[in-house]
Amino acid sequence: MDDPINVATRPTRLSFATHIIVLTLLGLSFVSGATIWYGQNANSLADPRSARFDVQYWRSLHGVLNPFLCVLFGFLAAHHIRVGWQIKANRWSGLFMELVFATLILTGMGIYYSPEHWQDTLIQVHRVTGLVVPLSLAIHWIAARQWVKKISQK
Image 1 (cartoon, helix red, strand yellow):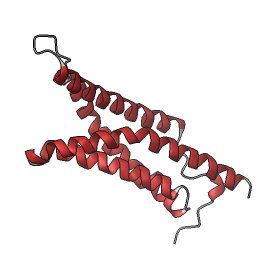
Image 2 (cartoon, rainbow, N blue to C red; image 1 turned 90 degrees about the vertical axis):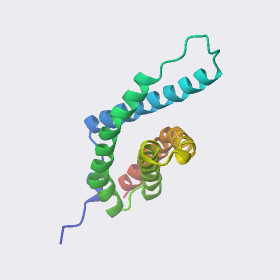
Image 3 (cartoon, rainbow, N blue to C red; image 1 turned 45 degrees about the vertical axis):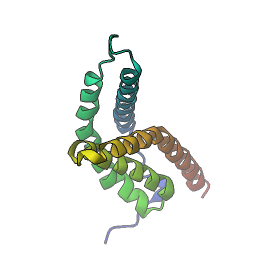
Image 4 (spheres, rainbow, N blue to C red; image 1 turned 135 degrees about the vertical axis):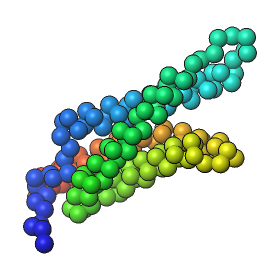
């Protein structure tokens, strides 16, 4: 059996480099996804004779980020989330973030590999869930700060 985890050492704390990687990947994914959405709406409203917004670059960037985000999700699940669950730190905000990321991964796969009649629904769910990412990060960060204060007082 493993020794009990010392909560005071904050074993779930991500390193500065990991924070930068997480924020960079999520930021690029958010910006590229929002730009795709903007471009699709701009093109649907534009005069057919006018220049159209080219979303292909942004779609490619968004797609290329997917394997890196899946690896990140796996890394967090194997280390940060597993230990956090054991020490009962930020369970609800962490679970919320896990659900958001899992929904994005599954709907992203579904957009490419599901039957065509599901496409529009999956795209809408993916977009709305993507908009929730900054909120879920903020909630989790605030919960983490409160948890650190709580364990510091003990």
